[in-house]
Amino acid sequence: MAIGLACALTTLAAAADKFPEPTGIGKATFGMAVAEVKELFPNMRPTKATEAALKKGGEQTLAEFDLDDQSVGPLKCKCRLRFFKERFYQASFNCPDRDPVVEYLNKTYGPPTQSTATSIYWMGEHGMVGLAPRSAGFSLEDVKIGKEVQMTLVTAVFGQTPVITPVAPTP
Image 1 (cartoon, rainbow, N blue to C red):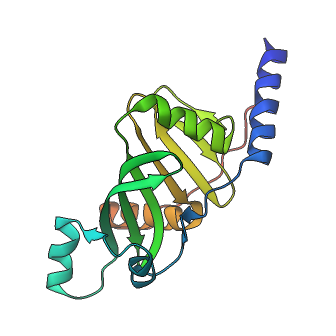
Image 2: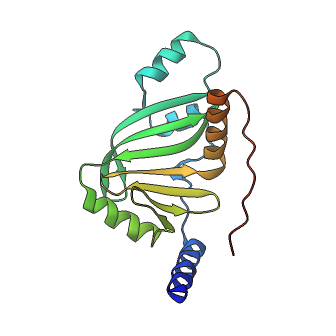
Image 3: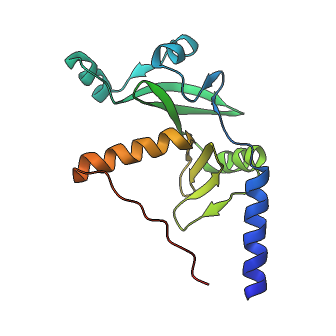
């Protein structure tokens, strides 16, 4: 049993070493400003919530824009682009068929590095891919900006910056 677990962990570690991390979608790379991405995708339109916030003015911390019939590899999907403080950090896709999505992700990114009962992940140092295996939904994300988003949301909800203490593995 311990040998099997060690082999599985070695396989996941090896997969992580070879993981081709996403850097964005098409020519739009993570970290680009909304205006730069809009030049590349002139058909992107703000979601209703983003449109309402833009009308109010002021700083736009989170913004979402939709693209219909977006190509990603051989797939045509609905796409939502997410920005944090004007920086592109995530593209999520809702595709019509699950099986081609799973095939595309496995072919493009190799074996997943993590999986749970509800999610499958390809985790890299700078980029990640997340798949909801029961649907045809997946996302590409910048890890660093994604962590900033999570910390900002936690701070907004709880009113303080969380203290994260690393936990040593149990021997």
